[in-house]
Image (cartoon, rainbow, N blue to C red; front, side):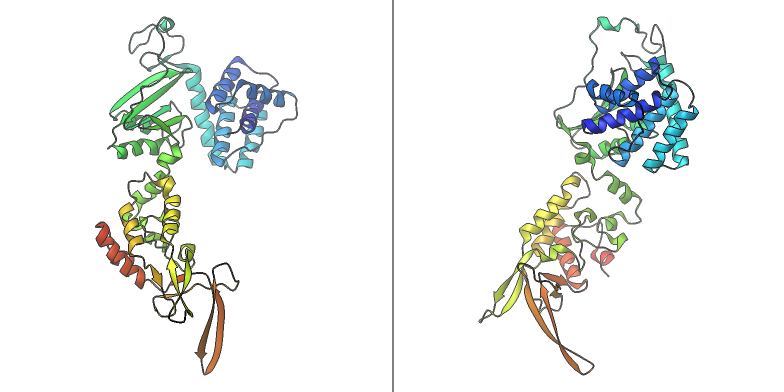
Amino acid sequence: MTEQEQLVYLANAISIAHADSSLSPKESAAIEEIRIAIGAKKSVLNSAMKAVTSGGYAPAKVGSFATQVSNAADMLYLAFVDGELDAIERNVVTAFCKKVGLTQEQLNLMAKEAITRSDRTQLKEICPSCSAELLANSKFCPSCGKPIGTVETVPAITEFQIPIKGYAIEFCESTAASFPDALKQAKESSTFASLVRSKKAWHCATWSENDFDAVCKVAQHLGGIRNKKAYRDGQVVPWEELFGFISCAEERSTAYRPAEFCFGKDENRLNPWGCKLSQMDWTDWSRWFSYGKFVRTGILKTTYVWVFDKERIKHELMTNLNRYRYCPFIRLRLLDAVLRYLPEQVDAAADKNWEYSRSYDEVPGSIKIVEVKKEEGYTYKDEYFADGVRPKGLGILKDLLTTAFKDAQVSDVTVSQLVK
């Protein structure tokens, strides 16, 4: 979030705590917790506080839908951290949730989660030595026996040792419903560690370079949790860059025929590349069939053939797939094979498997086509511009995939399953 978005986010939360015109110590502590969680500076918090205390502030939507839902959850947390949700707070939160588009059922569920979160904050602490939960004001940890009030004598460890090879995920304790499953999977990793940072328990799991499937299982459960980081070979990698394919992979896992799912068979929009996220389907309207140019041919240079620009096609494919490049189901060998066996050039006037793309507006690189047609005894001219070619039917796709599948050694799906 930008600083302005953080300001609005915090002001929305503060407006709940300030509904009774005062802030209790618990509310102040909770606001500070939220500030740290979203990475806002104290100056931003001060500006947000001023915006609310000046009077007349009304909560406003900020950021993406996920950010707005998180904001609503934090507002509910502040409402419950110091007691029950009173009428004024209820009205403010309800009005904000309507702006966001949340239903009453969703609001009720979030309220339950906020109560659990506030109870955890009030009644539980984390042992800085072993990360065990313990009652507030405990003198000793019942798990490891270490004294709670004297840990300052030993320098506290606040950073994990991230391996220079392989994968690592660190994540904060959360009240999200998926958190227990994430923690359970993480504990099965190659190494697992916990520590306390800013009075919160953080966990870190690491895996070898060849264990990406296990990494993804944890990432699936952490999708909706805000405080997390991913590492690859010792370097922080943006979460969406490493796990951008996760939601699609989840859909694939529930598909009737997962391999066909990748080719878009379930949506009747086939692609020859083996990944529906390529956004380059085998359809009449796909723009990639216009990546190339018309070249004059023949003795008199009066006819044209279409020459595909395969470098441009590959560039767009790799650009579209870049966000999902860590997906274990991407078939790079097939992608190369399809490009290799795609015709270098097409004579749409002579080849029955191809036709000209139609455009009634002249564009750079297009040519004018005049076709003489006869229907029911009448002869007429069909004139239009063409800026590329289009496949007629699925025959050419079937032949292309038959050759490419053999070259790329695709064995989990057959051409006949895709193209009948």
